Image (cartoon, rainbow over all chains, first blue to last red; front, side, top):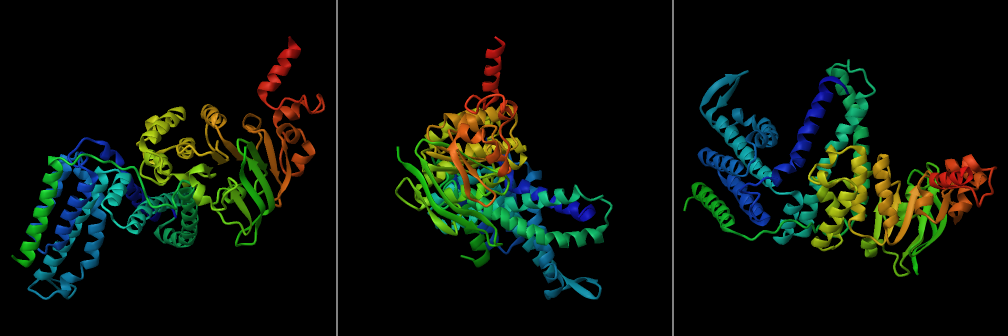
Length: 270
Length: 266
């Protein structure tokens, strides 16, 4: 699995590992880093919900601006935020792209006999923007708050234990999954010449996918033991971070409430 | 004194039909320091997992502290270090990985922080605590895994090859932490390098996954026939002095050998 496919796998694995492990931003002194994690979780989560509720591009862009301001105040490099948030909206754009020709409306341009409509384009742009801003907001939580603090905040907010458990295990296993993928590619590349083309690369990728599945199952089982050996059979109970709720927390909460109200009013009216 | 672990008729067969353990009886008393040695594939890791309550044996029982057969009920008293450090590193930072055990097992944060700082400092991890685990070298990962088990101060340590890819300097530091451990120790290893320093009793596993010897360190380490029959080699000092000295006089460590030679030279 050398060549293009291997490089692609390695790039994706590397980017996703960065996504799950960019913790050092959380150690910086910034607006969101100084917040009580419960407030960050509720308020930024509320903003993301407001984005999901809206059906107006202007409101979505306004929330995008709020996201950028929060990132700047929290010493989060915009390039990193963009890199972390770009994959999901781009993938969703590909998925909803057919709507550009399926939705009825005024035809703007004809491609291979299919009419791209204004309503279709508007839908694709709005959908992609909403997903992008929503993911960027959720990324802000993970970037500015240590993972264990997010889990602890969920427990304090009385989120059902099963849900916290699923979240914790999913997050950790995704990280291990991509690590395992990278190791497999490295092991394969160390025993190949690197002269393979795309076709050979895909053929190898198909062969290795079975091995990858078995390895990830095996690793999952072993990591499960590593967790159980240290009390992992008990409900998640990380130490987290508890701070006194201050004016900044109230301000952030107020912004989130305002966002939810604005989004609701614009969509459904008073 | 009391019995810490009492395994009776422990047998474990993997789904592919491989029998890793066969009718193992093993009793560990409180404060005992026991090395479990065996060649590759002799079932050391499976025995460690079974004693640590991390695999259910096909047959037999393990009783803990003369009280329960449920390992989860005494999880905070059992410090199980698995062979591969990667199995312990699944959090975004090294600090969160080391804190995982103390937090899950109910240690108060202040005590945990003090212990973690001391252990991290001893193992050279203080500057690595905020790093993602995947950025660590093999030896650093091993040290982080050892720290993550010692952090919650278990009574009983079950350590499977705790030195891994660690260099000589940190091997000594880990050895110091193990020898300073004020409790029971089970040390699973394929070689005898550290055995005389950490153990007073040696259990030898044969290729069939059963115990073929159980005795004092000197008795086992100087029994060449027993060791070679089971795919093991005596320590290098024993190889050097066997035939030259009686078994009870053979130096088991390099330090003992040096002292012996120094006395002769003086």
